[in-house]
Image (spheres, rainbow, N blue to C red):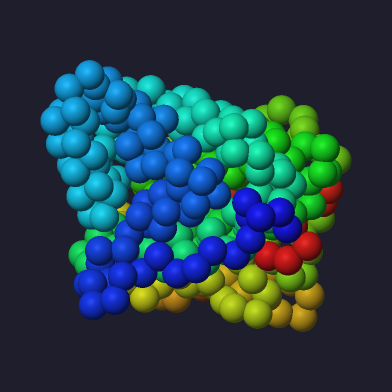
Length: 335
């Protein structure tokens, strides 16, 4: 690796509370080191539309005060609220900020795009993941660390198999993904559309890719709204680990819908088949296949029922899921 992307030392400060080291703190310190100071935390904030008009204010007192405020935010999980406000005002703000950061790293600081992508996949992710853990321990209750890790693992796996000549574009996607992850604790649904054979809103139309077949090692479960127009969240389902869905906090998929039972159902892999089993739910589970009811606990009992690609799973008649496969050519080597 070039000097710009060699492994950096720890940014932790001894005796500081762990919650002080947020995901944004680690991210900003890595960017400052990679860019040789070109991208400090003030500049990083300005990239996504926050307080940009104060960054280079003529009054040095205002510049100093702004730096102090942004430094405190960077070290506090409150930064996510700032980022969220910026995103709600302009949904493209993370993509725009990613282009600015890529230009600063690759054009101004001389970082090699391919090596920087590798750095984002390894050293940077290790510290940002730790920062998210710190925030969770410090009280950021909405963070689902398992989901964040799962989705970023897929994102980074996708970046690994892209052609070298596309490294600059891949780096931009990664930067935008990190911004979104640090803000919302999950990955933008754009990743789903990169990796998954089809999503619910695409079902009526021909698939973009040749039909995928379900693989033994993993499948994809997508939570979508009732009209199938938006992806709410998504998970990988691994053959080695049954996926539990319910309101219990230790479920793999925590479903807040009060009509869904605390331990509603689970998806598992047995003898070469993916199976759905109702766990004794109060309001039932059904599976729709090609618009027809293929399984209904009120009619067929608890199962297990063998799932097929593009099945729609409906819990308590009010929560909707899509069971699918990853696109063969885009899918990472490991789930």
